[in-house]
Amino acid sequence: LTAIALIRIISTSALDNGLALTPTMGWLHWERFMCNIDCDELFMEMADVMVKVGWKDAGCEFVCIDDCWPSHKRDTQGRLQTDPKRFPSGIKKLADYVHAKGLKLGIYADIGTSTCAGYPGSLGYYDIDAKTFADWGVDLLKFYRRFMPDWHQLGEGYANMSRALNQTGRSIAEVHLKWKIPDYEAIRKTCNHCVKSILDWTADHQKILVPVAGPGGWNDPDMLIIGNFGLSHDQQQTQMALWAIMAAPLLMSSDLRNICPKAKELLQNKQIIAINQDPLGKQGYHTLKGDSFEDTGGPRRCIISVAMLPSWQLCDPKCNVTQILPVYKEMGVQNLFSEVMVQVNPTGTTLLTVSPIKSSHL
Figure 1 (cartoon, rainbow, N blue to C red):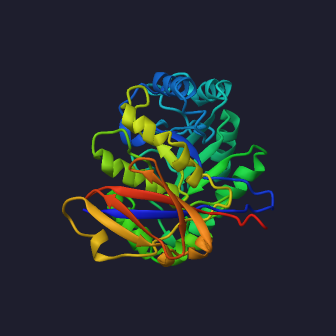
Figure 2 (cartoon, rainbow, N blue to C red):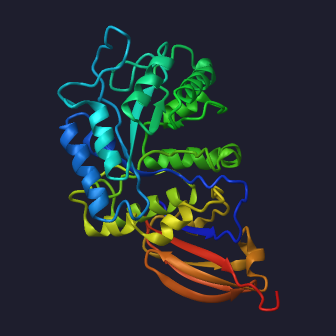
Figure 3 (cartoon, rainbow, N blue to C red):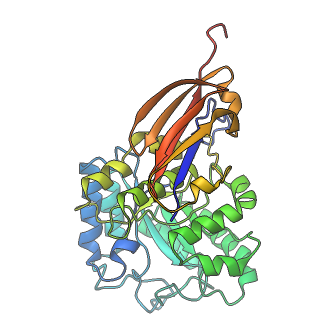
């Protein structure tokens, strides 16, 4: 298990090119509910909760359907149909309900012949499926990449679906695994593994991944599983901090109707969300690694030299350092020669922000 100290440098200026797009925020059903759900009721209740209990105000705007929503057979015109047991009222009615709440609806499809759960894929039906999603009022398409007969055709498939979506005339955001990646087998071996495998793979390939992330396109390490049963609170803080720094989509997959107060507070933390939603859209990256950050054991006191930070210039002459996690703490004015001491739990995270202090004469 790993103890991690994370540092995020606060941007001091924003791009002035009209691209104010930020990582997607919302809720996705898969990790918590998978296939065994009463979908009509569940999704409407989740939309209600997102509006009533502060999720929408925190920036969460998407209610996303994952796998298991379609029927196993297309209709006579080749269109996807909803499973009559899971969505008896259809996707269009759900989209109307979600839109009436001021939220947006996302849906899942697969680029290949089949979805992960064995439902019809979109290969050979890109135009039909894009039009179907537009007719239903879908706002986001999570376009997965399983069961493609020839993995080298991924680029062509994504381009064809993007073109088909554009031709519908409806604004539909497309979320998919980028096809221009050096090692497809590594992706296939990583995508369904644990959070640590995803993070290790991302760190190993960050020189390729980080430069392509930005407004309009984000690297997606998958769902936030905060508020479920598998992670301690320290581990939940670690996932939230890492996803924020990586400028990753913040798609929760927990039962928001019964989520514990600590998990809710973490997911709605304004300071962490602000890091993730920085309009500059710069993905953070792994900069330092030392023995004290990797050892298993009791809580560690870590001393971080300001001069070792990748953007140490922000503290020349002075800067403000603030601890966001595990608890909020103002650490005061620092300079280039300062050292900041923090305590990191064995599976926990200390998240700091550093912001420059402008000289009064400027």
